[in-house]
Length: 333
Image (cartoon, rainbow, N blue to C red; front, side, top):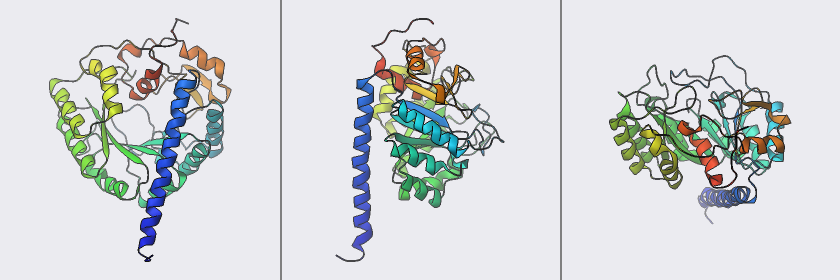
């Protein structure tokens, strides 16, 4: 074998191992879906509330909070594993502001959980990508809303397109570029440009619908609807397509949905204070420390209807709740 074949052989071996690991993770996730209704399918964990940006439409950050101590995060990961949580998404604020993010990722992967993260991408570097690769990260969502930054959203293509090139070349995990429609009418066409840029780099693209401070809908204009249709043709996805037909189609037309929200059970939002909340927009309920959260809490929240659910736009909660659409009645608590 020529020396030049070594890196290629190593790369193919690494790719094969990751495909096998991904298939195993998918099988475990499906097992958690079918085997029980009382284990979380996704926990979103805030590793720091601080963000390096200040987007006008976002209410999920501050500019001063320290990173959550590593020992706390590791304890949370242990407890989520005991609850038989299938997957975990590390978020913020901006999670790349946490110096030990890769340590947390590896701890969750060692406990057989699917691990992803959400970032604005500004702090991405080749060094960070290598660290995330070694830790076993399986997916990254990078948020880009417009071409040039403005007061509403600083998550711009002009600021991070070079980072997309780095990810396309070096990331051993799946990368999805996500844009929010409805941020500003003037920048509607920017979302199409972002989707085209993602496609140029061989990356997936998805679209979210802007919500207000409670997580409920803001209907799209005709121009925004047209942009949405064009973007989804550029980057088709079975998961996003299913989410559109079950939830987003009604929301985009200003109509409500009839569904059973399983937040607090199938989906957990763990804030930087270590407490479990329904979601990022309904912080305070149930407000129980994760380390005290158990089966009784999961069963209670599984059966609890949420008054905000008809106009909720949070795709992560939709997707984790859809598996129990026709089982487990909800009664007022």
